[in-house]
Image (tube, rainbow, N blue to C red; front, side, top):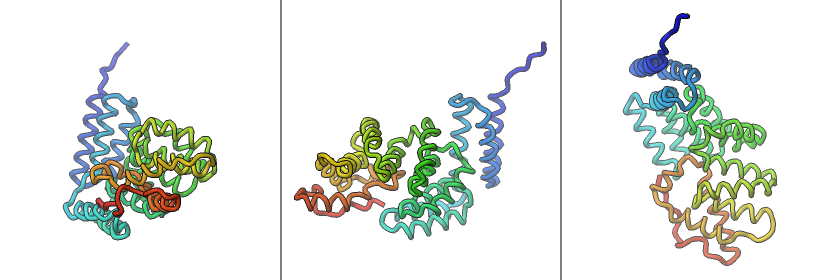
Length: 279
């Protein structure tokens, strides 16, 4: 019987080279489609799969022009303080470089930050077409479903994408818990919170939901968690804030928590200053 020599390694390396050549021609869509098809043929977690995934991430987010990158960086610097102006900068960057997944992800995140679920959804759809395997893109889909209060879709996505979400699970869990709390499913939310606390000890939003679920669910209110949350947000360094930049809900509860602490006679945070804007 005739046997054939496997050529998988040569094949995937050739496809990466083809995608890189297409990138040099600024044809991001074709480059991504070549890699997506190749990834779908490879066994998950194999060396070929990992290299193809890495190439897809790099080639869909690389900037072709300095002008687009400058507009993008300008938008990032305004995300927390001037989100509307940040969105304008990101839109300009996208106009210069249509299909750049780095810009699409950040535009979606900016719209989620100001609770514009439908607009965020459009950018996530575009990003999914170019890199559906990106944990950040999958997280954005979860965040859009949470923003839209689509509980069935959220549960289905969380279940189907468990392993893909692993690198960003500490953020995805918060979306899930917020949705359960909205539906008054406090018992399920507290069970998830316990595992979340083990997964991400010291994460500000864990402290927020520890307090919030105790307040909503009746019983003893976790006032110490509220104090710790307020202080964590108050004293957060620029470096720490950057490490949490995928979380569009980060420290949004501080105003309400501080109001509660003042009403109950506890000091909201370690100083009377406003939280730093680290841009």
